[in-house]
Image 1 (cartoon, protein in one colour):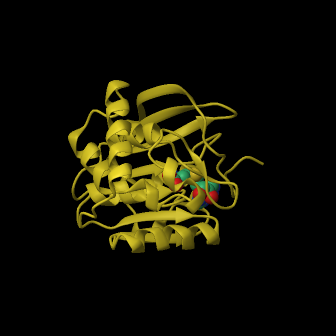
Image 2 (cartoon, helix red, strand yellow; image 1 turned 90 degrees about the vertical axis):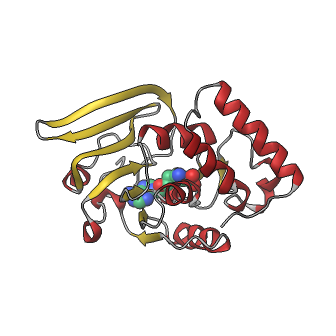
Length: 220
Ligand code: SAH
């Protein structure tokens, strides 16, 4: 479903997309299409609606943030998200990244695990406003993944890991991809592939800052 957005939002969205293209954070037509169809202003707090199409993260609930658009486009593009791919997301937050993924996989269900109950509710409400029905938000510690629906073709972790929880690799298909920010105060975005020879690093880019992964496998 395509929801018309008002003129000011549309202009701001067009400017954001031009900026992301110029800076090469957005290069893929399908991801651009997802950005145009998933209105970010529906995923921020009411105080930030007017700023929703600036390239910034914003505080949501529980000291967490909605990710920066450049980061969402970079991660989505690297993860090579296509129709029919089965995805697990760790860290639903506002549900915006989740909605972008759900747009790209077509009818396939996206599984997204969030540790804070208030954010599970926030994300579910945001997704419901847009009639997005192919997302299953699960309240749990995502460091354990979501074995009930495993294996996955793609896994995305949207919180900083000191070490990627190994259970997630067990839930990844052969030739599947996993993306995560890895590091302490500043992180590298790493894209990994599960191959018969083991886990192989495909891409790595430094200087990202994410909120830390919580729970059993998070920062102690
Ligand atoms: N991509 C999201 C924001 C992610 S912020 C968006 O654009 O809105 C990271 C999220 O990961 C937060 O919502 C945080 O509560 C969640 N999180 C942190 N540790 C987690 C864990 N162990 N399991 C599940 N979710 C976790």
